[in-house]
Image (cartoon, rainbow, N blue to C red; front, side, top):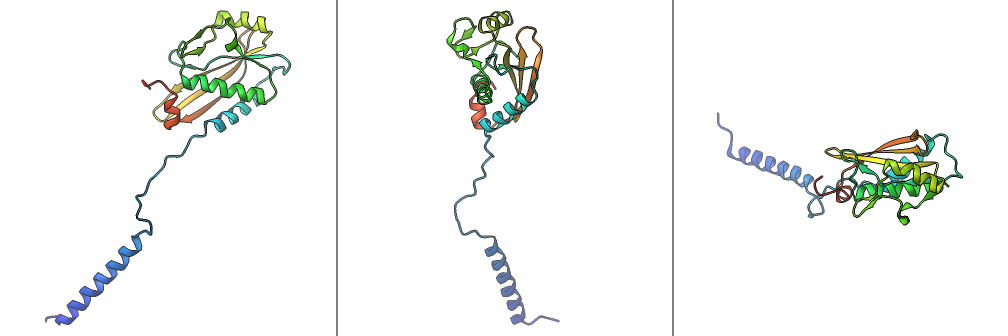
Length: 187
């Protein structure tokens, strides 16, 4: 039994109409290409939160006695830092100052080991000498490590006279373009 020709044409026309309608539903009003952006890392906000956590977890810290801040260093080479390490130190220092603590600006002194493009690296033999000279109760120190998609930052406030950790916190920074730009090219 054969199907009438008009019926085949009608079915073909109906199917093509339904296909056209379904494809039209997929079309967008904007012919511009779809651009997917990676979420931005708000490093300042992350560090502000971490600073608050650090201070909330810190014990035996007197608001009347100063703190010295050291450049944060690469966990794999404690003699090496980067723009990220220097920036993290500055941001955490700001958090301490905003919380009402006194922080000594050691970059203005010659008594600290400062190396160009590294920053002020706190040498253990200098900690007691500097803390005595400034009557500093503690030192802000930090390390960072790179993983595939993140940088992990560990921060401590260490009592200067006996190296006891008074407070600590850790944060994870997603390695977006901005964070990567603060790291050495080898990373």
